[in-house]
Length: 143
Length: 117
Image 1 (cartoon, chains in turn yellow, green):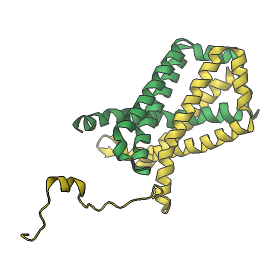
Image 2 (image 1 turned 180 degrees about the vertical axis):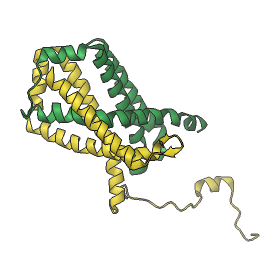
Image 3 (image 1 turned 60 degrees about the vertical axis):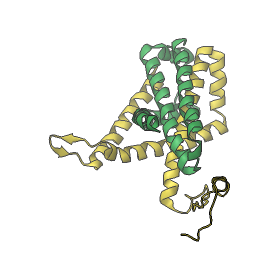
């Protein structure tokens, strides 16, 4: 160590410590199917946000009056809007299923001292999801 | 740093609640209002009946809670998508303001929308 060159404080700032920091591509996830799955799942949050913003636009149009609502429903009937909603629906169902899939890991349910198996929780959630969807669908269509 | 760690369970709770509500409730809205009704598979509800449905206090609360918590779900998950996907951990404070601030702004706008409806 006695041979080590003396470095002043100023030089230490100038010559930054040589920590190995590999530069990763932002597309680090495309090579593995599990990572692609992970990134798609993470990106479903964008669709959740986009759709609730669209819900805000719907509430606003509805409160503006029949003309504004008609203009919005006319736009809903365009091929672009229908295509967009199909993409949204696919990604939202992906969100729903992956959410149910991890739910038993995030929250353990017990009956007495027995742990309820994850598969039963997932099946229960899916059944509840279908019932709630039918109920909301019936409410919107029957009014 | 300590304050950030301390806040994470709070953001995670909003994220979890929003994830659950959006998982159960959003697909049927998209399927009906965005696809089935515009394609004519189901009859479109009339303007007046739809308006009176949204005027109901329970519907207003439903819409507010669903929209607000869904935005906080986005905020928390997208924050980590930016960290991991784009590796922007060094921009942490800006990302947190953008994500949670955006969700808060959306919550305020939604509150105004449902109160003044």
